[in-house]
Image 1 (spheres, rainbow, N blue to C red):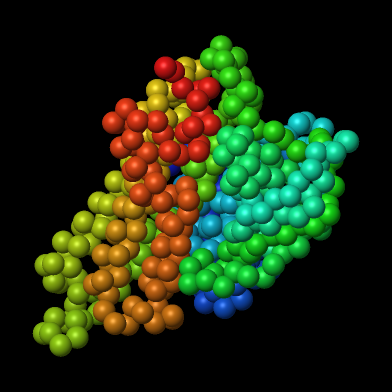
Image 2: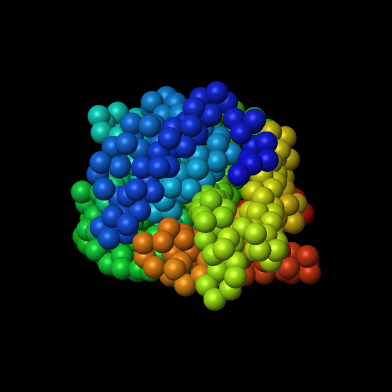
Length: 415
């Protein structure tokens, strides 16, 4: 599948990491059923991914990471997803969280975390289901906290958790992010799903835990209010700091969704020449006109999705370089591009699945796993098409946004 020139924009180091991901694809495919049956990634695969450097994509260079571009992260995750959706989901979540942690935490805190000998991997949940939290002297006391969908929790060393639930988010329009070692968190083994079974997206619970103030970050609108001139002076990794929320949108889900769609089409094109169509005279699906049409249309949907993803990255990069505020439409367009790309990818997988015959529903058929995994990925809050398209429609109508990320980005938007 062509990458529409995106790889040409990667550095030599990023291209090598992309090749490392490509080399893992056959291995990931071999482990597909075991990953689903175990409901987490086997440790031997975790070690292979680690040895390939793929858990350090979002880790700053000063801490031994690769600090790749957002474009490179999406391309590498997409490549892993050609092999297995759960693996790609976990790797993208950990890297996105490592990157996000490096943006929001102070240097002393980061030094204390990343100086540890073990490889640091963050899982995260950006809104609590339940949160009873008290501000106390020197920090925060969590009487009770429950967080859902902690993807990669079984493979993480730390969690980045929002100490606010939905009510708290509505009242503050910002997050209270806490860094917590996994040793202080109870993983509730409740991830029994039809999709992304191996992502270990279990619920997380804490009771009567004290977190020092230095390990908690208050993300409020005030942090970047009136920051137009400030944006132009930021350098290095700091220039990403004001855009942490929109970067979360780009690094949560879409890379894996794109790769799953690519993998589905690749599998169908490879097997169709050797498959007939039951109760017809056709001995090869590849020779049938309407299937040729569907394959062409599915390929264009996937390539169009990639173009929308690239546009969203370029939109962000251009504003980061110039330091100019977004228009409300430009900012909403990034979120909508991601959600629409997810919809195009799921449409493409639906099409090839529909032409694959009854055998496609077997658990042993790779398309069955891809079909289930992409549906779960596309249902994530940051890639749900209906939410993104509603946002864009509201902006075009001149109505206020309904999406929390756009609402909280007000300081980055021009009137």
